[in-house]
Length: 356
Picture 1: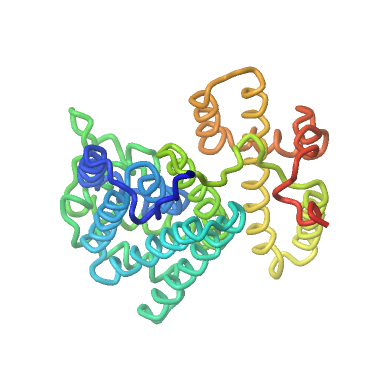
Picture 2: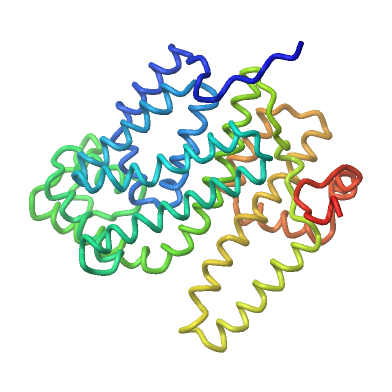
């Protein structure tokens, strides 16, 4: 008799890993605070929680969510905690419920993507309403007030931003042990520079980060959640990364739309440039993932392990995304790996015409 699948919310917890994950979240809280100033990293936080839910158990995911929300509350007060909860909880619950209801992988990923986009939109509207101003100004002022009241945690975040090269400081502020040495005036000057940089970057990147962050949270979150369930011995549908591909017809649609928006952005930049920037971000992410999938397919054909493929994914997604993008476009146009030809012989889970 086939074993009935257990609900993801009733999975047994790996208590050792649960304690370890909670301890790491608490110990690394200053580092986690840096994600507030790196939008792409911040949108991957739900992916981390879904990974914990799938691999470690629901207690780990719930406890680490509470740590992230408490950290936001310590830095930004009650409204910060509410915004963190809105960014993290809905997408995790929607992604988990979609899997629990046995929806197909791509339908579940789309649901998670939609939940993340709606949550980010809700946070933006909330911040705008609270500040009585546009959301970028609201975030900038919220950040300034956070550093004014955060004490040691704020200093740790500033030090981390300096070490990452996001905020520059004169050598006179670096002590003999390499630690940042700040007086009140220098700290205020650094905070002002950081807030100005954030304001400039967010006005350009916020819409694009909302779109690409939603794709990442929905797609990658569903992937790690299902892989975790498979590791636990549960039977769930999961198309391996090496099979991910954009159908040929949809590739033409995406490429043609990008080209049209590029032309319109040159003719009417004030009206179309933002739309082109957002769409190009989604285009880049989709085809970078396809490029990574093509490389993983070649590695799989050569018998390389999943660990090697995981390293390729991490490098392609976080470090070498331009190279992954070019490989993805080449895979779409020329099928240089012949994987599309081989996979086309099977049912294509992407193509709505497959069952026509």
